[in-house]
Image 1 (tube, helix red, strand yellow):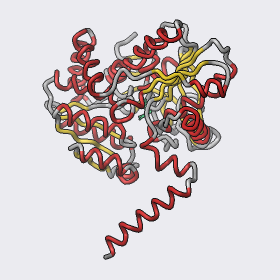
Image 2: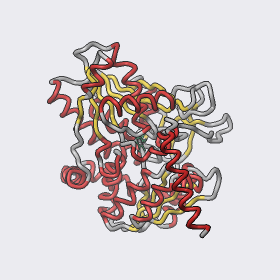
Image 3: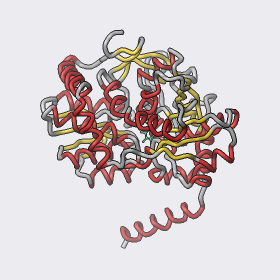
Length: 411
Ligand SMILES: *Cc1c(COP(=O)(O)O)cnc(C)c1O
């Protein structure tokens, strides 16, 4: 297989000026990949800074309630900054140091990757610029607030749709002009080679731990593993360690308001996605026949992306993974059930993976087991969750807060 390609997907599509930088990044990555000392250093940082290893929790109440397979939950929600994203970001931070650079840039949509990158930059002493669509800046104020507190410069993008895809273009543009001292910290397993492989390599710590944990508890491999698929990094992170095992791997896309509407983010199985080139790589994109990127929708901001990892697209085409879709409504129902029965508050993204597992577990034998990757915690989603649950107390709180500010401004 051609380097950087996964079947007919992947590749490296970038302006000529960036090619040399991408090649140098690839060399640096190849070096650390082969270097056992690097993996020790990487693991050491995550163990001391981000509460790794994260536990594998047996969801005993849910298993009893649903019947069938034992449900285990991999607790990426317990990471520092609340999700799996920190794994990749700390890995790329160590790599940035090795390359002798002192500045990082990143794109962010909902702001989670921006916060993780700004956190890493604060810890490692890098200057940090985060590109974010103007609309996202406005609707994700809490994350913008934290990025700025962490010392990052947040640049609102006023071009195009003023969303994630425009922020990605701008981050690349910055990188082109500052290649000498700057590393671009891409947030998911997408983009030009070596990013898809590099990001999934850093995230593979999830599956390595999960495999050891389940073998210790159950004495055998799980039957199925579920993960939500935005760009694909948490899914590849838990799948990688099981790739050559007889374990069924299930990726769950965001069905939004349903596949019969335009408001979803299912690139792989809705029939609305098609292969194309964007953001530096070949994969499935939600695009019009003439290649314009479509608007996507999901209640989970992290799943609301037009493209998907070329590695995921290839695994799907090879039938190594199965892809399913969960709607906004189903995700919120799964979230509610998980909170009530297990006392866990999943991110809306992760709730998609849980929902699919809850659909399937009851018809599996009682001596079988499944693992769900709980990619992040739900605190960040309080605005969307309270709205979806139509919580009257929350609305009252927002109104009275707004009232307080208004009277400050007016008097
Ligand atoms: C960003 C995010 C995702 C989606 O990204 P992937 O690269 O597909 O993992 C999923 N869950 C959470 C909690 C996130 O923050």
